[in-house]
Length: 308
Image (tube, rainbow, N blue to C red; front, side, top):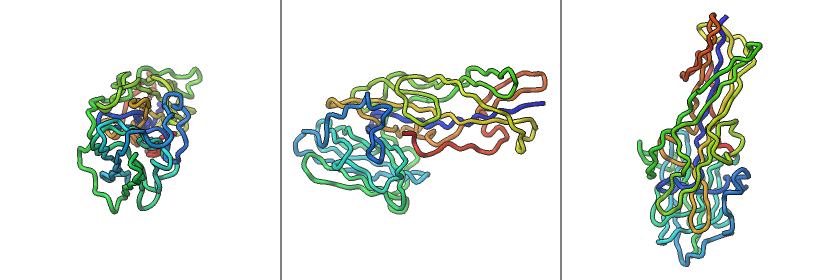
C-alpha cells in the first residue's frame, strides 16, 4: 500500500534587527521582553535617548492584504535615536498575542516601513515620544489606511530564503518518517539600515514557540503516525506536522542591539505561508520527498501570529 506523508512548513521569517531601511525592535506588542533573545538585546536605555530636542514622528504607511498595518517614522535628528519600549514607545489596539518587535532603534531621516502590527479591532495606534518631550501618534486600520503598493519595502535585501529537503528516513515499523530540512538563502550576517552595524543572524527551524538563539538552519522533523487518507486521490495513508522557519536579523547602534521583522518581499511573503513537504512510499518500498502545494490533503495553514 502507498503511504503519503505531509509536512506543512509554515515559513514565519522573522528578522531581528534593522533591515537596510530600518528594521528594528526589541519586544512583543504586550511590552513583555522576548526571553529567547534577551541576552542579545541591550536594554540599558530606559526611556528616551539623550539626543536633545529630537522629534520622532510615527507614520501609518499602509495596510496589507491580511489586515496588517505597516508603520514607519521620521527621525528629525541626524543621529541614531533609541527609545525603549514603554510609556514613550508603545502600541495600543494590537492583537495581544502577536509579536511585532516594536521599533526601538531609529535611523536618521524618514523610514517608510519599520515594523507591522495586526489591529485587534478597528485601529492600532503607535505612540512615540522623542527627546523633545512631545508625544506623537499614528493610527492605522483597514478602513482608514491606504492599501500597500505592490512594492513598498524600503530595504535593500536580496536574500531568497527557502527550505530544502536534504534527507528522509522511514521508521523501522513503517509508521512514521523523519525528514531532514535545511534553511537556505540566508547568510550569517544581518541586513541592516546603513546607519546601524550588522550583527550575526539568528535562524532556526522548529515549532515556532520561541525565537532562535543562534544560527541553526538544520532540523529533523517526524511525521506520524500514519492515518487513512480520505482526501488523497491516490489512496494510502497520511501524516502531517508544521515547521516554522525563523530568520532573525540583529542590528546595533548607539550601544543598543535591536530586533524587527523585515518587510523585504522575499521575507514578509513567507510570514504566514505554508509549503508542503510531501513524502511518498510506493509499492516497491521507495521513499521520495518533494515540495508540493497540498499533497492531495486538506490545507494546513501557518499562523499569521508571530512566535514569541
